[in-house]
Each structure stands twice: as C-alpha cells, then as structure tokens.
Image (tube, rainbow, N blue to C red):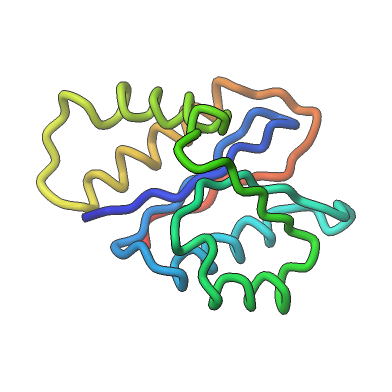
Length: 140
C-alpha cells in the first residue's frame, strides 16, 4: 500500500506531495523535515492543518516537533471534520485526475502518477506571491 502525504502552500497555491510505503510516525516526521527545509528561513511560524491520525499525535512526533521544528505549529481539526481542511479538495482532484479509472502495475507507477499530477498542478497554479514550496522527486 502506498501512502501519500501532502501540504498546500496557500500563499502561492502550490502542492508538495511525497509517497511512502508505510504510514508511521517516522515517515510523517521525514515529511515534516522536507516541508520545513522548503520553507524560507525568514518565516517565523508555519501552520500545518492535520486530521487526528495517530501518527500526527504520537509521542515520537511531538518530541521531534519540539526538538527539530519549533516554528512549525500543528493545527488539529475536530474529529470527523476533514471537510474543514482545504487540502481535501486537492486530494479529491488528484484522486479523480490521477488515480481513478487507471491501472497501475506497482506502487512506483502510483507514485509517478501522484508526482506527475503534483507537477502539473503546480505548473498550472502559478501564483508567485511566495516561493515556499519547490518540486522534488517524491517517491521514497
């Protein structure tokens, strides 16, 4: 099973996605490391809106956030209210345009479909008010 983590930078309407073979706190922390490295160092606070998945709230995640990412604030949505997270619309678009009605031979093909969709999304949504997120290879 392939797990896709993603963020949307609403200052420039850009997406950053990364695929992982597992959905554990260590993968989430790796994803946060990548996101933090993409953010301009002059930005004092970065807010990431999340659901209440156990990997987002684990002790390992909390410790990593305190030690390595003091400027990142994790904002948790109320339970059973994913529609409050604006990224959900983009997940729906990706599902419809890149995943549904497609046949994939393996996880790498799915990862490539997600990567291609993300690159296309960022190319066609080019508000240049900020350059926080950049394109990186996403399949790990």
